[in-house]
Amino acid sequence: MSDNTNKKQHSIVYTMLRIGVIPILLLGIGLTVYSQYSVREGMDYEMQRGLSGIAHNLLSTYNALDGGQFSMDGEDLFKGETRITADYRILDDIKNDTGNDVTIYYGDKRRMTTIVDGDGNRLTNTDAPEGVIEHVYGEREEYFSTDIDINGTTYYGYYVPIQDDDGEVVGMSFAGKPKDSVMLSTNYMIIGNIIISIFVILLAAFILYLSSSKMVLAIQYIKRFLGFLAGGDFTQEMPEEVLERNDELAEMGEYAVHVEIALDDMISRDPLTKLLNRRATMVRVENTWEDNTFAIAMGDIDWFKGVNDNYGHDMGDEVLKFVSGQLKEELEQSGFVARWGGEEFLIGFDGTQEDLVKHLKAVTGRIRAKVFDTGEKTFSVTMTMGVTIKQPGEEFETVMNRADQLLYKGKTGGRNQIVVDGEEQGIPEGLITE
Image 1: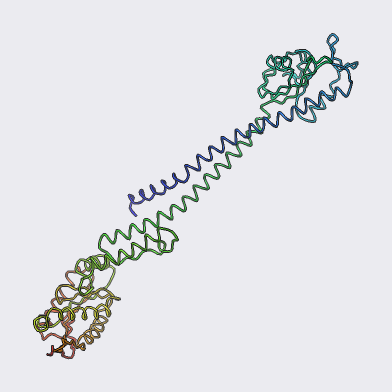
Image 2: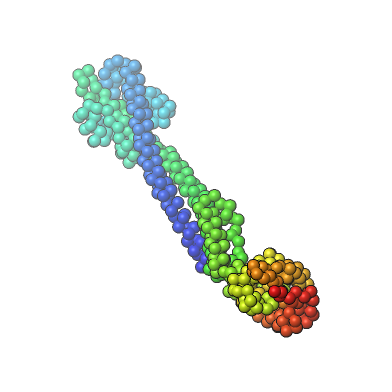
């Protein structure tokens, strides 16, 4: 296959890959973006639920400890009569059990917390975020945020208002988790989805490449077959890889074969005798001459002009068709038979000169034995043949001319005989009879 053909084949493959892969690629990108959004949304929702439960649980634990209200006495935080400022067991247990930080706010300050600074000191008596104060204290509602800045670290955070007996918000119960730690697991999930999408895209591309390559190969076979037809070579066969497919390409291959048969009859065959014409013969010779050891025969129907003159051209056509049919039946499976002009025939035989002579004896015998009946008269015909064989390196024209000279020798030497490179092979005489 030429480089240009390879480029065209690759172009078709890549076009089919683009048609098949680009939608999958876009789908994969869309699913990746959607999955990223869904994962983040799902993670945010799960964090909200989880932190809400922890913040409520923290408040419930202190309510169970003492039924009184939260209050401050100087720097100490009390729950009812119980001073809880110095006792971090409840907060630390929750931190250890859940992995989340918790804080008790009173007023706008962190009074107790598990959050520490870079030196490991608890961030007590530090301010709550301003937006949180406005929302929880002002609207008396629970509040969740995915973007809480605590000492330079971004947190998921959930705040539950702490109210006194009059319903006033005096503090907050907080549960939170550093966003980086959450995003790490989220990113792992997103990366996993991306890897799966890439794998699916590559797998689809590979499958498409295999299927499209086979399709392109079938197209190339059909193209090559049609190229032979365009060049007048009707000896080629459609590859089984095309005809055995179960799709439209197999139908195209079958149509091409039908076209070959039709064109063979139309372009390559003599309309009357259905033998190869000169043009098709030369194409056949060009494609097979170098690879075969051809024996060549030139044959002529003896006294054929007399047939036309005495019995009419219609009867002459009958003689030509009969002789052609006999030659084709006997010899075409081993080479080719062509009508070279008028009543003259060219025979190419893929074999030895001796084998060709045997075939010619058999077929000329049948021709000689045929009795043609005009309704008023009967007659028979004979043939004269000149036979030679290709020598190494010889051109077709050289061998054909030698066979023609042998034919001429037979015609001038009495006709009704086969002449083989100077040696005559006699055939019993069979003259035209009236």
